[in-house]
Image (spheres, helix red, strand yellow):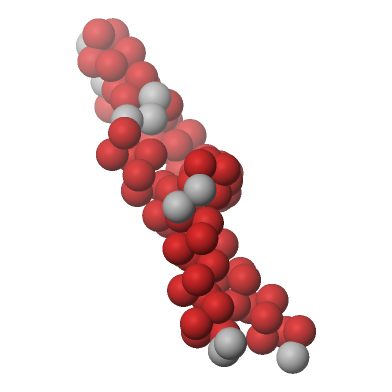
Length: 92
């Protein structure tokens, strides 16, 4: 089995298991976490005069919607697959 075939099998295998999806989500979330805080500062600075909008903006940043969960899981799966390929190429 070559590396491209193994990468596809890894992506599908991890993507079809519950633990794989959760791991991929947590992997992507941990990488992108600092961006949430930057977005939080931006919301705070632009909505200081309207407390309701400020609270809604902060909640929208830190609460994960199903669409965001799916997007982060796919990003995490791609990152994990690229790292798998890198590991396989380095092991040669």
